[in-house]
Length: 293
Image (cartoon, rainbow, N blue to C red; front, top):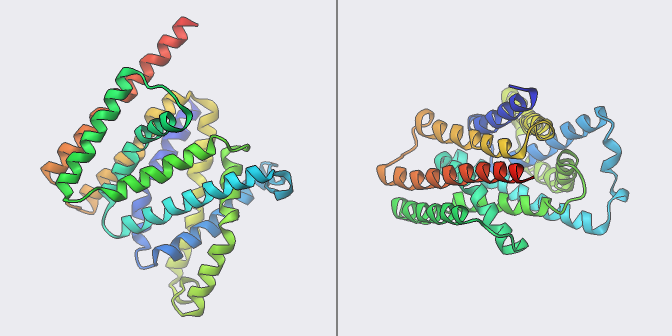
């Protein structure tokens, strides 16, 4: 395998293992944890951009008002996604979070139809229909709408949609997004410390090290993913992306022993079938297009 494939696999594996990391910090409130993630991620990304000679791209004066609005919206979406994900993991919903990232590609395609008037091919419609049936089955199995999964998929799909119009690369973009969230995050951390519930002054050295490490576990896989995206086809990245939710699902069921009933399995199975159809159809369509050229 070439370097790009390895970078993609390591990035998705790290993302897939994130529930274990957040579980180590289960004693830290989710909002405070995300504030730490934003602060340390921004510092880590700024360091990477400085070392790569791209730090000048972070200057606000180099961005138009439209670009700043775009990044403000994407920052709010990724912040909401991170907050919900961390809360859900530590509340015992790892399996449901994995469902969100399984259905995310199908939701992204559906948003493309609604927003950009993109046309789906017949088998893509079949895949979306089967996934919807899976969500209905899971609603029956849970006794409620799987809102955590749908909210995670929705915020991340919307984030990807907004990023389509962003003028800068993914690494610089994430640095700008965390930069826009920096001041609110510092306020949250200062307020927590002032009330005596902050983890900087009142937490153990291990907790503090893990909080600083939240920036590392955010930055490293993103750098690897950006490297992979430059080296391998998007179709291959699209297939490899299921590594992360698969690991999350296995961690939830087998490591943390979250409930997973037969009825839930039927719902997940429908989603997996939809993804298999979607992936195989996409590969076949790309090969057909290449042959035609």
